Length: 338
Ligand code: A2P
Image (cartoon, rainbow, N blue to C red):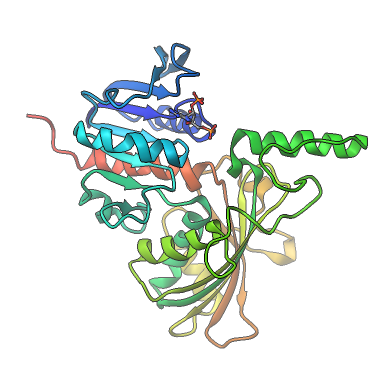
């Protein structure tokens, strides 16, 4: 068990779910502290039945903390989290800034818990679109190594923060009323549309979101040879990312074998009955911690190919749940203070 746990970004979309999960899962620590920007400092929140004042995030704010769970923009994580490490804290970071740093562990507890347990300093939680995919890939990888992945994502507006959802709602209302709406986060109208760009242009015409899926998948699965070809698309859905995934494995995996492997893997739920029109959708997967898999079928174009559909709550397993699971793992293995 940790002595003093600080939640940084406690007022954000993911930060608020982290608080809910820590409460629901009875995460124990002697002290909790809650930090956010100057804008929120001095306001209060209730956690485990107690009222707390939100503190301003500063370089000196981490004194006495032994665990920090942070969910902030990348530049904030870049600037402040080294100060938390210097103050002696273990840091779990949701941002994208530290993930590919060689000294930082990138962890999904169902896949590489040892990386968290051996880590010194910052432990990163992967990007939401990567997390749900690697959980599903790992279930198959344990049957036969995955060599190649072709993935198309259908990503919810909640992935773009509170303002992303506001753009969806206000933009939709305006469109239905025949009025103009000035989008705050999306570069095109998201209402009644699909935008095939998430993030900035990076490598050979792929976007930053797509390249995260390439690099993070290799790091988490510990296989630098996995080939990943992603297309990331923002769609007008409030919450939950969906992914169409086709894998090529070293030896063929039948749909029946895959269904069994998915069902046996921790954190995966299978909903797969096309005849009964049963499959995962954002509407039946939201506010759940699981990764859902369905539409499992043979790849008609390749003997070693398998295709499936994967949906998960991007704010839960894609972010808050994964961070809280890492915290629970660390807490469980922590030596009691002497
Ligand atoms: P605040 O609410 O005070 O702005 P989201 O992306 O959902 O808006 O959440 C981002 C979280 O990160 C919020 O808790 C936000 O605090 C916090 N945050 C953003 N910028 C800073 C900053 N410069 N310093 C500290 N916290 C920040």
